[in-house]
Length: 394
Image 1 (cartoon, rainbow, N blue to C red):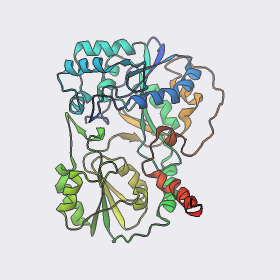
Image 2: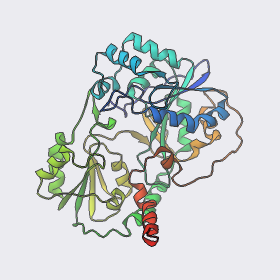
Image 3: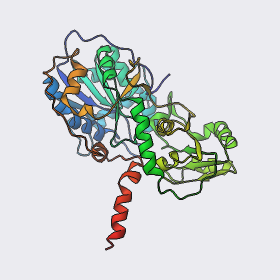
Image 4: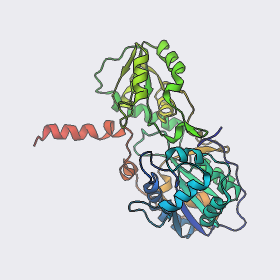
């Protein structure tokens, strides 16, 4: 398996403990539209979110490794240096060049030396790190913890998936994992809110196909992006098995040519813009499918037949299971507290004593911080705002 779900070999615990923490992300990823980064704010956000907890837990200083842009500075890579890296790989300076770097097992020696100079003697904590960086770190015995937005997004706040390349980190993460029963319980509670006032008539035995952004990293196949129209045979089978095939376009690409092609190809296909959680909670929707959208993982918790036409973007160890190479572990809220990092890193670096400090749970804390809602706001907060505005017209 290639791409973000590929397994990374573990490394031994470093003989010399890390002396600093480097926060990063996919620092070479270019925008589809301009020569600029797309993950710089995410990397800085992660550093600000976890930096103080890690300082209290380990006493280590933290740094940022990122392509600087906008107000993000101090990352060590500017547009000119990133252009030189693209040139060294022999790829164009755009998103199509980036996709050829994304999965690289090896890189030009001068590029490898440059990146190594920024991460030696470090523990690397990354937000959705690319496989090329994970491979480089593992090859040189540099420990990392990768953090992703967990595909289960119907909880009161965002949940993260974490994984590392050290066995002690894996063992510690297994003890912090959320329970599968708890996730199913929360799905039922959210389904009640999502479906309560849904008035649209849905034919029995319907299917839902979800479109994605054209350059989503979960659609990287080797050195290119896959497209929904490449799976028309699978989509045809989906349409044939169900009375209605609803196609939900991506809100940022509502009239994407691929969506229009699917809608035009099948007589029982129909566009729908209803909330995803509302549809997942509706009993008439029996199957939910997409190329690689995280919503497919969510749909299974709502009791749907869930189909990835391409592949899942990530692999997960179930709650309490020891993760194997490449598996992420779902953790909820604990990562905001120093004691979590003390437990996670106690065999990797000297840690301070646990002190029981807690961060009170607050709904939507990280959603608001990250400015990412994935339709959840429509069933959680938007209806209350709309009701207030109706009751208090200006």
